[in-house]
Image (cartoon, rainbow, N blue to C red; front, side):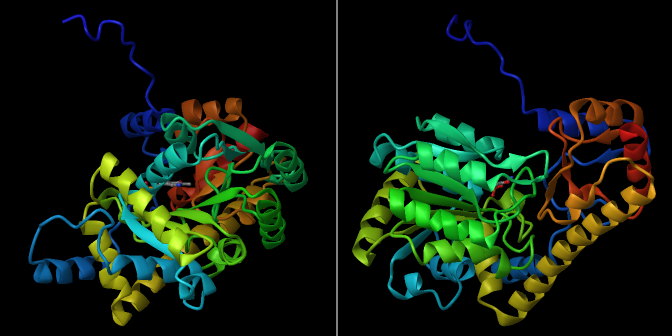
Length: 400
Ligand code: PMP
């Protein structure tokens, strides 16, 4: 009975606390810019039409609930490879890539972490400062040391690429792992430019390090193809790579937990060996992935009509967010705020590092019921036509 006496409760995720505080706030003008899910102009996170239709087909055709196997559905792998690398990829043609279905992007990262920890002895993971908080938690829990490289520059609201490169040149050792966000960097919204991907590809090859690319927002930046330009450039020029992708955002199937882990190796043979070991890591984690989300994804991708509908829906989500970025910049400027917020329009994806200080964020919360993470990260999709004026006026009052 004394077994758990020594355990101290750990603080919950501050972002989840922010969501609860927003829910409990009686102010009718309250705005939630914390949570990282897409919202439409009415503040809802609706199920995509293409997903609804695919689910109907799935229910009609589903004949069994028997186990799916360690790697998930066989239909899945070629579809995600084409989506990530493009259909004319040499890597795909040479059979140098193997892919498995995973429970979300998180599942993919966890399997990657276990694979790296058990097989690439002494490898350290290099992540951007800042990065998605779970990157550090997942790799630490697998026993991998995590090191931050300079990334975001608050002075310019852009990438500190020179600092990033000189840090990596000084610190990376052969066999280390370099984590990059494919697009729509979480939490900053500030992405690497294509020339940065070129330089990083050279560095990866010179140093013999393993790139691990996290693709959680394909389609939310500039387009399904455009968002993968950097990843594709690198994938076609390095000997090995891991890609963890998530379908949570671009299919809007967050709770269905669907993503993928892909391994690229120097030869088809090596890719198969690595993949078999990844299979072992999966087996020891959750044995096999859930079916629902993946069935939706491949039902859509295999059906030209549904695929066109889905592409359209991704475009709508992207256009809404990018449209809000322009409106925010315009309305903030019109509100007479002293700070230049034009950088918001250049950022991409769900999030924007707003440059608001902790004090300003706290005042917005306590005096205006506007909920923004302590770091100043805003979830842009939480903005709507009905709250944007109040938001911009409030920011102007708080910033001065
Ligand atoms: N990577 C990044 C950068 C993310 O922002 C997220 C989701 N917030 C994920 C991975 C994982 O997504 P999921 O597990 O929900 O598919």
